[in-house]
Length: 467
DNA sequence: ATGTAC
Image (cartoon, rainbow, N blue to C red; front, side, top):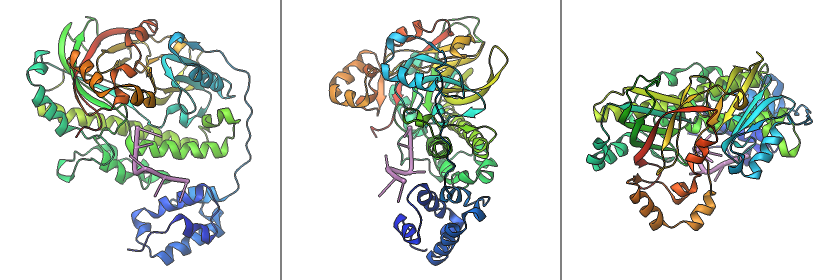
């Protein structure tokens, strides 16, 4: 095997500083190119550098070639700020509001709304909803494309959890994988049709991503992601799940599209920022028009990442259901980092970005988690036009991760969890329940957006770490 | 959030 080329080898060859080096190095990692000798690799790179236009339609090298050509000089001005509605404005920090106002000045923006759990993010705030005309903004979808909730409701009484705490902790340890190194091994793997999708072959950027996707499928990642057992309480007898009012055991998971979605988000954001140059305060809101090649690629890649995130949840729930020897009575799932083609009340078709917002179209079910020691809510959307048929995606952070680590004590958090009868595997101080806003107040401020069908109270939680 | 590296 040839020794790997490095950035400096490409610089010596004459590669300019910028994206081309990273893109070329990434391509060289792909199996069929990795096999080439270093001399052959250098000869190929030299040819691409000399005649990038010849490689613009090459399946392997189109993106590297594009990065070698001078960027189209597309400076775009902001326009007058359009109106939008804020829900629970008393809970929202000024930084998030400012980001939303910037987004409302994009010439492609048609409408927007800010959810009560909103906080500062990259580009659009987390908790921001943005409708655009024929444009998709990768950072208005978010880095974790298809980050979503999935709930399975089992025909088991709540005592089931209290009676089997150790057994169920062992189930979570066996059926879920957290962090960046731990994946399911060959014998443990479950197959999934999403790994056979054409997009891995037809979209140049995805051609070296199938391996990672296959390796990480069924895993949860880190940060605020979790898999937890808890008590479901169905409150509304008219619920669409057909469940009688009462208590059940539930399994709730929160995670996204892992490395696949992150690489798609970062790659297409850079592409957007190259082709759509906005004033500094708006630069992370760069868009791709849907009729451009890049826009169509992102749309297809985003949808693949969304389906992949869904597949990861399905494998988690499949493994747990098998370990319990049970079949769920009902399931509720929803993306909360995604973009959809939707129609506004006036009939216009728009792209609705929800970055940390729950789809809440009329009759659409979703899950809004609280914290480890506060209930989450099973909701039915009311299709409110003012929120662009959206609701919050949780309680929202009250305290930054750095502040949480500096100010909270392990013992205090442990005592708080114990007082609420919550068993936790992993989970750092930055995810402690007190770092989140009061979910009851957040729900209060979005009564017009969703109806509550039931609650989910966490009891046995697994997050990253602790193993 | 993240194959925690352009």
